[in-house]
Length: 144
Figure 1 (cartoon, rainbow, N blue to C red):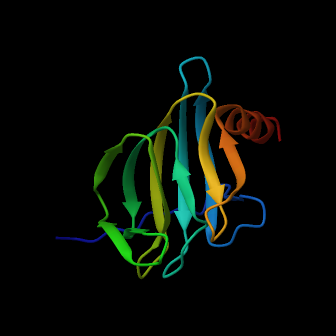
Figure 2: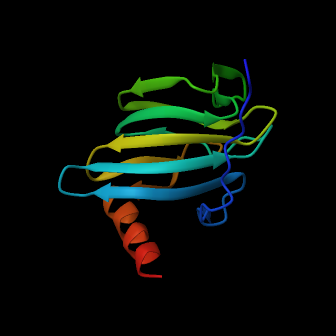
Figure 3: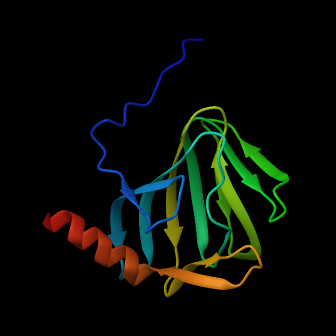
């Protein structure tokens, strides 16, 4: 079977604050129905900030291998390119990252209010991401 590479050169990747190994691009936000479609890129062989999902997430791995880690750093799950996952809200914290190359994942996030809690290594909340945060970032990007 022929292997293809996803060409992301025309995607305007943004960083989430000072967090390492994580870039995103918001495709669309429908605040009325509580749906945000976002591309995330996690660096190869790295882990992003510890967090928990407070909203339903549908994911599709566009490029690479999507790795999920327990808080202690052990592998929890590996999702290969082309895999789709539907995940309900879950208070269990985890980290995510790419395999041997940067992973690009399409997230369709379903919910209102706070969608994610960002945590320090002791699992204290250090920040949140809400649907209104995503909507504001999306509006700002479209206006630019």
